[in-house]
Length: 397
Image 1 (spheres, rainbow, N blue to C red):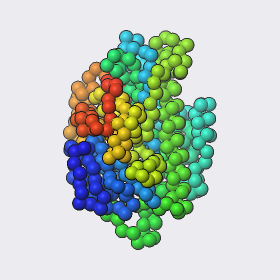
Image 2: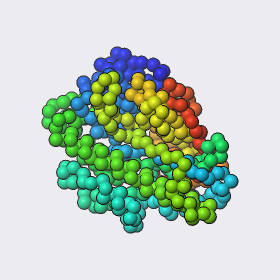
Image 3: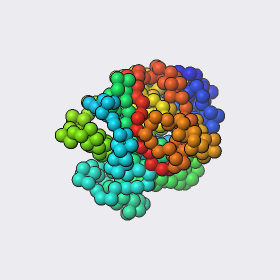
């Protein structure tokens, strides 16, 4: 831990060594809320976000802040260690294009719904009555077509090598458009309730829903639904990528089970019910992952930096959490002003990926130093594998 801020209603425990002023202001607002449990934990990749700082663990009793969970509900990572080795990774451009044909990126969806995606979607059940009444019909219909799609922004698919040249597949994505749509419905509801009950907040995006109300229960239902959708989305993408990999090494007989030596999946924008400091509470991880003792996790760098497969140390002061990545050090707009396409090509040298203006705002230089992030959380996680990408697939923002 780097420092503790103690002049707020609840203490703020910080693992970030470079927390900007705007992020600290947001965290201070959160720490003054009446339903915060014990303290607020700030991860080493923290940076300012909407309402809540990204890289924050918010433990609450009796309420949840929908905007703190965020609009990409259930966004997270999946990684698979395969039996393949680096010498089997030939013609990387061909493999990248194969993955891009199998997995829609950016705003694209699948042209039809495959059997596995249809089964996954139907198994999720229904969303809440409020969600159904306010969600546009085409948005719900589109959700089935988006299972197995990547999205844009900082979402990615990577083929990586560990330090022993074993091949890993790693991907980052969430609940696509339906997660955002459901989040917006409940964020708007929380804000309207604050106005209705004359509750004044320093930031409107701190609007909350109170446990015991129908609005809270409906949000919790849709939250869990979207988190399950996000996991199903990652699962479908991983199936397709592993199939592409097996074809790439000219061995179509390698089944999905044989292609997976180890699999890890973790949300990093979500809420769960957990017990901390002797109380059952709601833990919202906004850009953070669970790091219980021995629990496997994924901490990616940028599209030009290394990533880490870790095991949690179960530190109670972080609510058994750690960072979800390197974290941005500048906005997308500023990144496009500061860096050029030539900079992008230089910073992604040796990696098979897009190297044009469509992904310039994801240039490695706009992210924090992953080595510093890892040093700052040495009491939260233990690195087990270090990965370096050889292929990176991204959708345009």
